[in-house]
Amino acid sequence: MNKLFIILLLALTTLVVPAQTGDVPQHLQDISVTILTSGGSGSGVLFTRTNSSNERVTLVWTAGHVVAGLRSDREIIDSKGANRKVVEFKDAQILKTLVEDGRTIGRLTLDAEILKYSDADNGEDLALLRVRKKNYVTTTVVFDTSAQIPAVGTELYHVGSLLGQMGANSMTTGIYSQIGRLHNNKIFDQTTVTAFPGSSGGGVFRRDGTYVGMLVRGAGETFNLTVPMRRIKDWTTRNNMQWDIDQKVPMPDDASLAKTPVEDVGVK
Image (cartoon, rainbow, N blue to C red; front, side):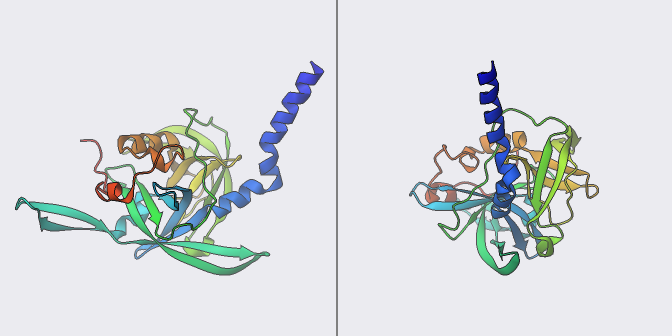
């Protein structure tokens, strides 16, 4: 019995070591970015993987309303002579603040194209971007793709750009304060992590660093709603996009992606 107890104790110690040593906070800093648009700024999380050509690409998850101002549409006449609406998006800018030896030493700004978008009013308020520069970083978010919903009281981290660039990569803490809030016929989870305008699109993480949701709405700095992973998973499944949360699912080639509508209009 004593031997079994020691083995279990060592296993539990291994699980909490990253948070104790500070590895998790640094990792969350590394995968979090500010997203700049002509209408303001928000937050995002980096998911790095290889594409169909075995090149390393960096995808960025953020809230749909963060990049909504980049959307436009125009009427064209298709090959059959019919009028058709084309939805287009300008690039967003991904801003990474560089910190070394306790001091900000610069800022790196890169263009990112919008691959998929769902609006906040009638959709999921989610957007997936791709940084145009390949081999940008090696670090990546780890999504919690299990079916387990975090329990009320679960301790959480949030990293976001509170108040925009000035608060880039600010880390706050809180708990899961409620599950299954219904707003505009959509399910959200509630958290007490501190957030302000600019935090939208930022990740909410367990203390081990796994991503459990995206902060999208707030009614006060410690009353915030997240799009939980179960909704994000449903969205990726509905759009045949599991490759953007799961490294094991092959990513489509660029020609296939170009044929996929950028705007998700939801289930009709």
